[in-house]
Image (cartoon, rainbow, N blue to C red; front, side):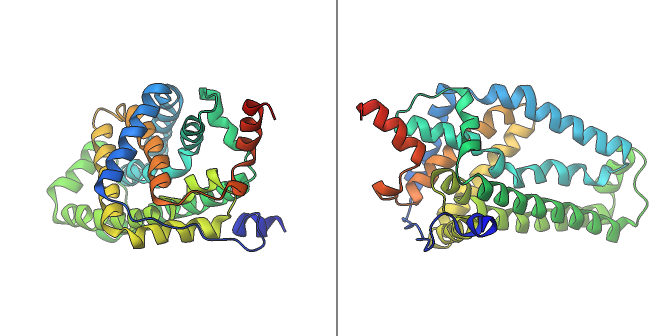
Length: 284
């Protein structure tokens, strides 16, 4: 029964949310509101103080102790594949601010009490599997071009990639392969995580709604993907430090994009925690 809830949500007859058509103005508004949330709740401190140092240490440990230099770039770029899951706390902060509820950085963890948290974790597992498949594919591509002997140093690896025909093929095919993975992840997750934070609809409805949003707004979602890629690239240049700002802004903006793409639920489907808080404000 628990497995059914994770997949199908709380309702025995799940209803699919209604998708709206969006324009560049909606993307601009989502980014603007995301930046406003970031300024009001500077969640970049969490990213700067915890997530990225840990991420950098893991990358260093993998490349030095496991001689996994060929996976350094796939690991760095592949982190964006699990980014939508890492943003669930940011969606919760934006949701509460939108409702006018009391909000602090601690509310980012309130999502852990959501009835949809099993479905959210289920979606996270799906992204983790895709991330591992991406790493495996990148490793196989490298081995098909250079063999099974890994480079022994950073200079040797850089020389292989930048000065040999095999390295040029690795760059071209590696980025094309990564592009395919990025499209898949964008399609299934751009709306699904904010939707699950907002409503307990289950993994199946969340993925269906996200894919439908991409299908019905292909140009706008492609533009959104380009915005994300460009922002992550710019944020990564100064040793990933810029991501401490870029990632929270994108996370908050993703919530507001969801609000503009998906019709709001009926009043009776409002988040239970929100109903309780709103009743307390009304004195009922």
